[in-house]
Length: 416
Ligand code: C2E
Ligand code: MG
Ligand code: MG
Image 1 (spheres, rainbow, N blue to C red):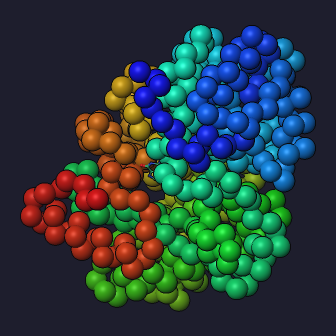
Image 2: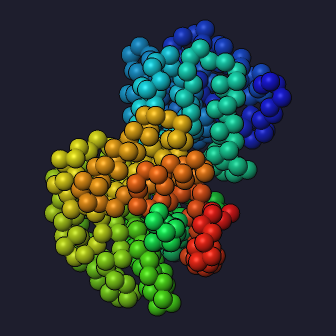
Image 3: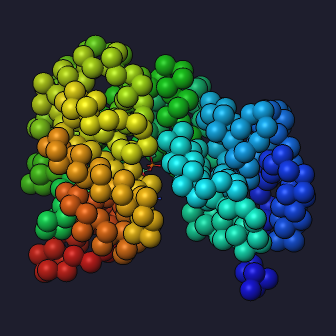
């Protein structure tokens, strides 16, 4: 019974934009939202009008967007591209009468654009569909008021923060599927903002890229990651640490040398350092970056294709690149047990990785079903909330001690 589900006030107070060319559907959705307690609803009957609304409300940005896929003029796909260009930060629900497989692709596309995709609703939409999508919102962002109001950091804030050392590094473990042992961790940047608290990368990476600050940011993250790794090595923990690179970093010819210098200074062995680059951006900038990528590999750094499955790399293209790890995107891991298309992509990724002699890491495993699926899939390693969320360095070591003990005792059940 839908009436029995009560949405928290924080969700009901979201600023919602509805976009649909079907006026009947627009009114219906608006009425459904009102009956669920929403009060701040704006409607648009086509993409261009919706973009104008988004541009005019940037001081109080829309927080939830429910968008039809098929519209005359600008369709949903083009609309998403414009949203990505504007770095739209609200959550998105897509509605459509199309084939479910097209809808699934749209979900992947939104994630590849780094838009905050929440759910797909198949038309005709019922209140229960809407409620189920909104419940996901509640689960994705528990109690975090400011996650709904995610504001991008300004270039000036990033500049000052780099000088004042506001960048922090969090670490999320990766485990081997053959024995459950921790193989290493991915380093993920966070921003310690003086008034906004801890800010996630979605609010500052793209701004840093656009304003020529990404090299300094990457260097700050890389240095901190290597300092932690150096310390851990001295304590006797041999870990492979992965750092994310932006493709914009690959314009700098001295990058391999600089990274190598830092590892030496911090007492880290280069073979224990992985550099991750996202598949979609890698493939579109390939020619320009190949030289630096190759030199990084020659120096001994490991190279990893991140978010694999969201770009369009063929086996042939991947074979041309000196990458030695492939990270299957969360879209083909989380919930994949109940989704034949996602499972097929996971299986194909494993086959491709095997054929090219790459290590295969499954990202974003959250549930026991994901865990079981990944374990059976032939991946080498797993990373995801079911193992642990990203943590500050000291917490990571504390967590590791517990995990190591449970592996020793033969209990490889996730710790929470
Ligand atoms: P990524 O490199 O694909 O990192 C994985 C992201 O998925 C992280 O989000 C991580 O917290 C999240 N994640 C891991 N396991 C799960 C799970 O089970 N469920 C869910 N829902 N999420 C999971 P985060 O830290 O917000 O980072 C987002 C993206 O920002 C990263 O995606 C990466 O592309 C970028 N990023 C982070 N740090 C840096 C950095 O230092 N430099 C650059 N250039 N990009 C960075
Ligand atoms: Mg990554
Ligand atoms: Mg990834």
